[in-house]
Image 1: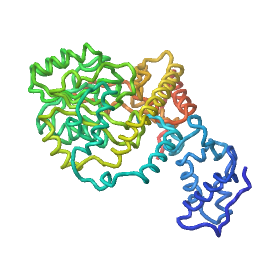
Image 2: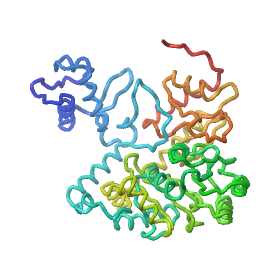
Image 3: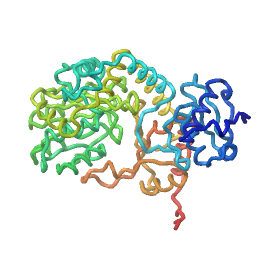
Image 4: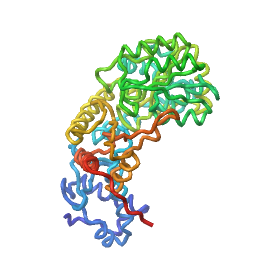
Length: 463
């Protein structure tokens, strides 16, 4: 353990920031070497006459910066900034030691922090003031939409800048798109096990959502056609490329069939392609097959960096005035500064670099899943951010969620993904990117595997 201790008289307020800055300077100056253990929280608090809570907040600041990392039972250690993938990083949830496998988000490490720091330094020196002063055009600055043309081509979609609207990610685009083409009482159809946000969004907007029977590729064509015959279906909402809860990948043939039915019954299509170019081998977007009736949504959030909340909405020209009107009401325009970051990374290759990094790391996580869950029934893909685990008959989804929580592991229950037409499901969703460190991810899966091999037991009721 280090003998280096800052002096109380050197501290300013807020105290935790001051302590963090002193430790940061000591690390930078080499006074605290890589691998050196920091003083225990209580020891440093006593030496500085501050609370343990204040020291904890200071250590948390350094953890978020990627400068230190905690090891359960051992303490907090100085990390090597040159190591980009083997050390804990800033965003892992540590509440009560929970291994959070419930949120499907991309992986990240010091590489992402380094790229963002460099980008922000460049912005400070050469940013066009229009980027932070602009409030028009509402669909996004021309240069940002032009950058989108090249990025969208990597997603398999060839469009002009005039058909692109900048968004703050797919969620923003989804609400803008759906409210533009559907009114209260209209019918929207989707997978019976659906994206949880389309279920919530339709409820908020008073839109009738109907879940259709599906297989491993998504909605069955016969179910889609029958719904169109029986009802005046306004919109088909689809997540055809690995981002739906059950990790379906719709084939080229199925996509062509769904487009044929949509044309026959004059149904609009909203396609959520949030993973963008992350999956290497995939069919072209449905929107490329039917651009005249499709709204396409993608984002940098899931394939490049969680906080890079920038994306694209692509729509036929006839829908753009209505979409622009909804955009103005909801948010006026996407945040130009974030769009600028995304555009720069798209043009200079940084986004491609991070997509390739993500692809490799996610594939490594799926290899761990294959090892730990051998013999169990699960669906996944090396480019997907989660798996769909079908449970053995002795388990219900509620039981497995509760028992996993008791072991310090969080998984997502099926209820948020179930449309009104869905039969009870005995499955859970497990994220592969929610935990930054692979050893901790494996630990979570090992605990889940242990549960699956036995029958549930009564859990103690704590009052």
